Image (cartoon, rainbow, N blue to C red; front, side, top):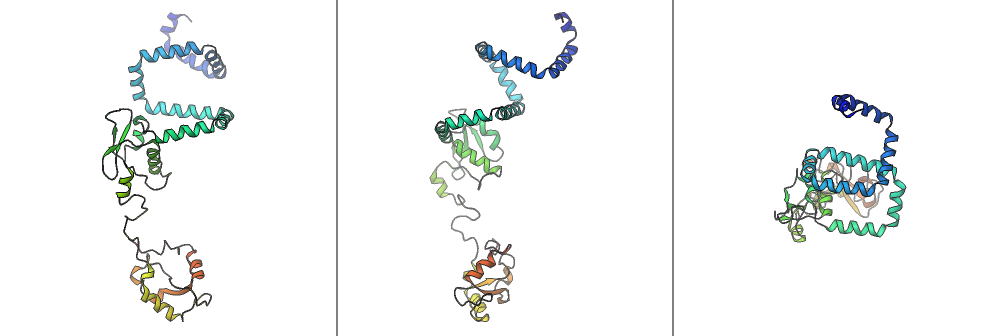
Amino acid sequence: MTKEYKKRNKDKKREYDKKYYVQNKDKIKEQCKKYREQNKEKINEYNKEYYENNKEKRKEYCEQNKDKIKEQKKEYMKEYCEQNKDKIKEYHEQNKDKIKEYWREWSKSSATYNTFAHQISYVDKIRRDLENKKLLQIKCTYCKEWFNPTNLAISNRIRALEGKGTGEQKLYCSDECKKLCSTYHQRKYPKGQKPYVSRDTQAQWADMVKERDGYKCVKCGSTEGLIAHHKEGIRWNPLESADIDIGVTLCEECNKKAHSIEGCSTYDMRCPT
């Protein structure tokens, strides 16, 4: 094909190239691989020069094709890992200490904006560090001051938001703010608040149940370690929780067995908040 012909028949040429590539995919890949191996320095020099001369163009392209680039990288890494399992395994075996040290340093380093902003901006207030635009800043959960979270802290927060980690993993600027925050490390209730009214406080009700049952376990007849057990949980029947008709006397062992039954666990018997 002459240059003139190619110019006049761009669509036809494109169609031909596409068809040729499909029919000779493996052959072309092998040729490209061979060329790259034989011309590494030449390719690196060309890429370096091209990147230097087209910084703005590259930046604009990356901004417009974020999802596409992300997907391409993901596919490339998946394919690479599949094709180089033994190589990767061998490298990890030979560099255990080096890899551990790398992740240790990474976890302590400040999180970068471009890496994490799009993963957390929908739930937490963030901004670029005013002194270093590459770094991410976020507001402390307690004092609301801006600070730089570490890679580990922000990663744990994202995992929690995706339902992969434990708790909410909220972010604090210092250990002092963690201690002062009423919800830090609390599963359900603020610090200092009793989660539910314990049945142990219903002493009068318990004595009446035991008296009715002759001060012995109704299951095994034991007279030691007696406990007044609710047949229906306070959580499900709070209004009638003081009625001795929904109570029964059990020993410690029988009480444990009763609470091991599905729907009769200690949590299920709690009083609602």
